[in-house]
Image (tube, rainbow, N blue to C red):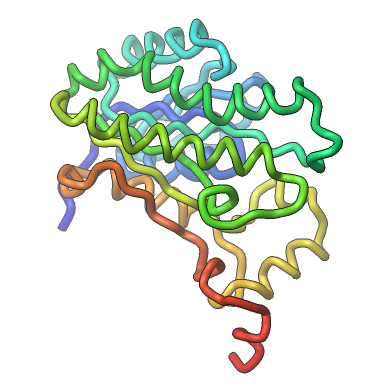
Length: 259
């Protein structure tokens, strides 16, 4: 039996849609008071409206995690609204596609700026509040793409996701004396607005490559993140958890042929 997280305070970056919205919903259902961030105010307003009436409150603030100033403002807002900050879910990320020969310096900087730098900036901004909590939790949304697998067009995205895990391991050491844990969830293919935009053919191909026989749900990632935030996970830090229905396991499509 897990101790209740009722009344604790969390920030979920990129929480207005996709996996971040799923994480926010999972935490709010558990009684956590959540502040979601996003760059589009309409998306934030929609998420806040849809996630009302749960055990914990969900409010939003427009912010760009690539801006250290915005990150500090997010933490200040969460602290003011919810009396502190116990949990940071560094989830915000972008995944534009581009082959290596096509990538411009601006393309690379944009992805690294949001996915990697944004993670570091949010952790920096949240340090004092998480330390004051006495049970601080940082949960990073990385990916199987980069740390474990590759996919054409996502070399810069994969690099940013691998960089998050490089940051995580040293951050976990440095922050352990402050009683802050730092862990990551590595999603496989999860049904989100972004995945749907890639088309049904792509989704069918991805589902066929998963031993579980289906794509993941945002709640699957939310539940993994929630576990890392619990008191029972206090002795787990510097770790990454793959949540992919077994997607990375087959060595070839033929391995699934007889299932």
